Image (cartoon, rainbow, N blue to C red; front, side, top):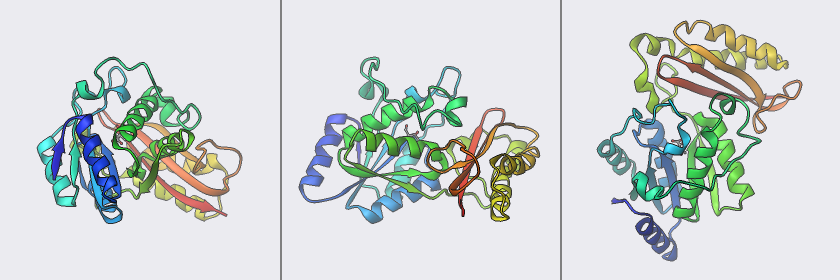
Length: 282
Ligand code: PAF
């Protein structure tokens, strides 16, 4: 496995791979990898001749006062995870390599990025879309693997790739959970022991919402109330939202019908947790 630091070198090696007839799978990450990332790398390794993992903590997607400085980093451990999961290349550029001068071009998806996370982190998705567009441009034609924990991020990136005719197939992959139901996330390390004990309530809230829909509830407000009731048990956190929405527009429009997504976000002292699950209301 090769570790590559520059845009010109990763471009050259991936172009060479494609010229030799090898398909490329791409797993973009901000590092501090866990088993959720490993599942993305494995999915890519299975479907593509070569897999590249990027490790880059992207300053553009952190707002003032968020955890950019503190974001956990451990490149040696990340490299070991990538090697173990069968990746061929790790692309780990510096901030100066990615942003040699202040960025003037920003990619935004004002529709799909607006609700939910967009209301709580208004500049976040423009930062994500911009760096992912840049990474897609650097990596070139590929399949790109994203975890469904960040459901709205998947929606933004899928929409961006389609709208801008990028030669990338976005592949969403299932959420990987701890044994008590907590969705894996690099930011889980921020939880105190007491908060960690309450964190599985997000999964339980989603289960309550899924049961309500399975029992025939079609009023989004009633499904949201069922989830909020469970989240009220997370006394150390503040609920940002508990939403039941159409899976692709993410904006409620009357009764629930077709593919539905349930999404929750809870802010603990330092960690802000998000989770989601889906069902069909027919
Ligand atoms: O999901 C993440 O880790 C990041 O948002 C991503 C897609 C790597 C862009 O920085």
